[in-house]
Image (tube, rainbow, N blue to C red):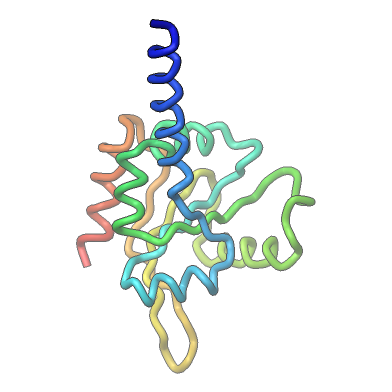
Amino acid sequence: MKTILFSTLLFISSSFFAQVEKLTWHTDLVKAIEISTKEKKPLMLFFTGSDWCGWCIRLQKEVFYKPEFIEWANDNVVLVDIDFPKNKSKQSTELQQQNNLLQQQFSVQGYPTIHFVRPKKIDGKTNLTSIGNTGYRAGGPSVWIAEANTYIQAE
C-alpha cells in the first residue's frame, strides 16, 4: 500500500515539474523578437527582481508555475524575463544594459510589471509597440489570464 501511495505521489510531483520545465523564458530580446515574429505571437516582458521582490515571487508561485498558465503561455505569447536581481554578478554586462534600456523604454517603476508588446519593423528598425500591461493580480491563473487576454486578443 505504501509503495502504491509513494509511486502515485512521485508520478504527480514529476508531472508537475515536467509542466514547469515546458515554459521557456528568454533573456535575449533579439532572439525573442525573432521567435515572436515567426510565430506571430506577442512578447510578454516580465520585469522582475527575482531574488528580492516578494510580489514577483508570489506571482510566479500563484500563476506562472500553474499548468493553466503554462498552457496559455505556450499557446499565446513569447516569454521574456527582464530581471533586476540584487546580485547582479549573475548577469552579463550586456544583459544588464538590455534590461536597463527596456526598463527606461517602458517607464517601469515597480515590480512585478508585465508589458505585452508586438515587434514591428519600421524603416529597418524594430520597434516594440505596447498592447497592454499588468502586474500581480490576486485570484490565481484564471483571473490573471482573463486580464492578459483582454490585451492580446483586443488587437
